Image 1: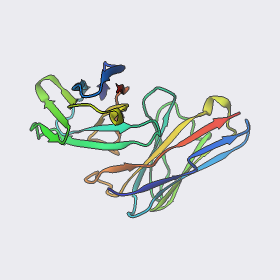
Image 2: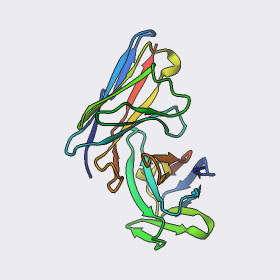
Image 3: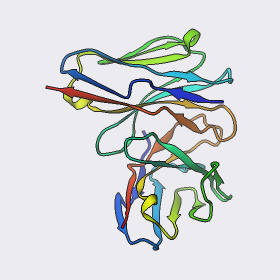
Image 4: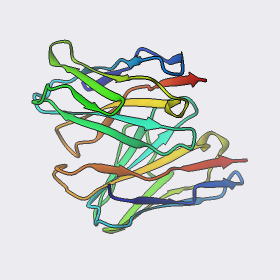
Length: 117
Length: 115
């Protein structure tokens, strides 16, 4: 399958600082990227969907000013957690899909474990 | 509304036992896709299978098999002769057929296979 790379794999930051997570599609052009959050022992919850060149669509209850998503190119999307707080500590996973009509699969990155201290 | 239910929170088996993970879904769409993913302790999601709503044929891949029953809205996953390496969290997911066709995940079943 196609490769989606997330960076960093883990990050520890101080409360109040911002953290950027990158999601790259290595061998295909991703028209659509998804960002999920997973708290310990819980399921994956979709945070937002982004299409290249347009604004992200956020799920209900997700603060768009806190979780900034940029999908500026067909191979890169970034999630920035602004003014992070301990409750933002979680596992963040991206997935990327080549086909805008979902005729191909979305592939997942390896995830980023964020710890805010 | 789209919903995926995995009623089994955790299952423990001994190596070589067969185990079935249950998945029940709800959707109003007539066309949809169902998925199973494996999440080992490292965290990455490993794609196992995709099934579309028009294909009710059961599938077997090595020790893995899937039983799709549209009549009961179930898509169960069986591991035959389980191994320690099968220990992971398994997620069933439903892909919506509208909008961005995003995935809705079940709550997951943690499988522990002991030697």
